Length: 495
Image (tube, rainbow, N blue to C red; front, side):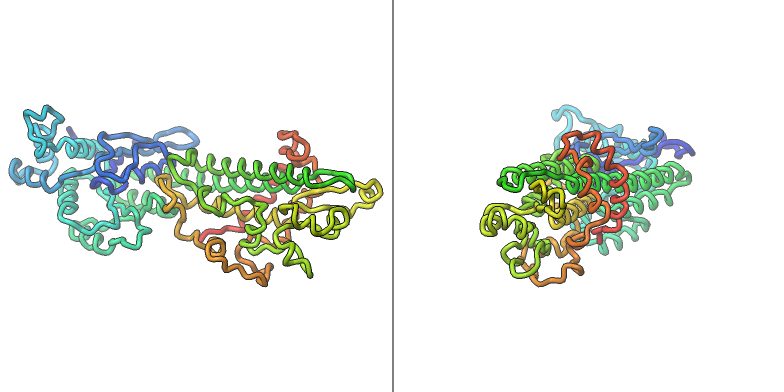
């Protein structure tokens, strides 16, 4: 097995190595944006064979990096003892590793020939891949103390004569021991390392990983091409996500139903609310699919948080976001209901309006023609539109910070997500007298909708919820959705 230097224009062969259960497969899942790659379990030796994955140019399909997920190094100290006892120290590292690979203990053979205590077939798989790769990343669980077995692992890896860069996983943990690790690594001439948390994802950390790897190569064209393409793709994802949200909001804002002045509005109100609920859930799943979170059983998503499960027409949810929908003496009674008391009170009586309607819909009787004909128009009120917009932006922000290796609900919150919204939801600290114009929770004050949403309220043909003509309505609101998406990008909720 002969190691050759990477040539210009060749795909980089990158081995991912490390001790068992440090998160090698988890890091690959996040780099690949693939919740299905490999198998992730909270137990040792989950990966038993080398698995290959490829990072390609999204425009040309060219393979830029070939990634190799390797089994965990289970007993590097035992292997080091064998190497010291059975190989000549005067030989170089590659020759000593090749001698090990030719020995029986490196083969997956009958246990009658080799005792299980001397079976290093898993380590052999790692070393074979190292010798066939251009470079390696050594995954470190930052929560682990620096132990002798890790020092032996690094010594063995160094014999492969390829660049090795330590990558710290689980860096968001309060128990991280990064300083101790960096001291040990420096003593082994490993001065370039990086942080990449496979659960609390930061795009900047990924770019730093590729950049650090590039500095260790003579020919780094493929990594530079990869960084440029992934930066473009990441920005495009964000643009597409904001258009999905903007299209959803305009579709809801333009949603209008008409009833006669004397009709009971309750059946229509309930139908409208259910249509909005379904539309929001479809939007949420479009965002999940865009960022490749397909199956909640594989990777946990923010939709499992209470803030996204709660009914958008629940008055308590509006209250927890600090949204006030009325003013004057009726403010307390109608908080969160979003009902025009003057209009509905004349037909139902104020008590019936408060007791029977779950909120989020507003009557519009300002048109003279409507008053003459006795028509009442019902549409989604500004407070609910504000709530829907805020929840959507929060979901997008959460997805942009989600690693594809998160497997349980305790890993859902990224480090910047515990903002005032979640604090108010969890501790009930909402201030009923807060100044809505200065409210840091919502994307805009409920009484100051963007111009695109205001315009949509007079364009029922823009809404598929009103007309039932999905494709035609989407084409009609496309320009407004594009315009609103630009404004949504100014409402970043990232730390």
